[in-house]
Image (cartoon, rainbow, N blue to C red):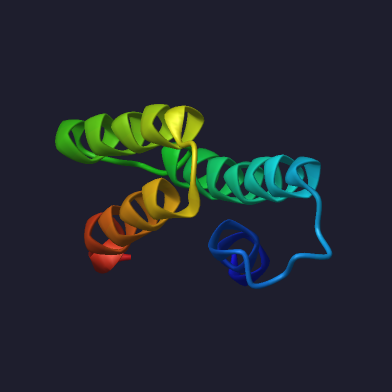
Length: 81
């Protein structure tokens, strides 16, 4: 995630725009995998709905800010675990 943020902020100019896309997809993959693991657990309806919404938001994310919002929401939802 740090690399993605640095690329977006222009701190790491050695990376190409394609690196930004690759890094974004890589982080989205990690988040999707984590959400998938939680969806296999016994969840109540509200939790399942929240995880499915997070999954959708992850797929729609276009920058690190979008992903940070998903992660922060996930931390709240997973508090009981």
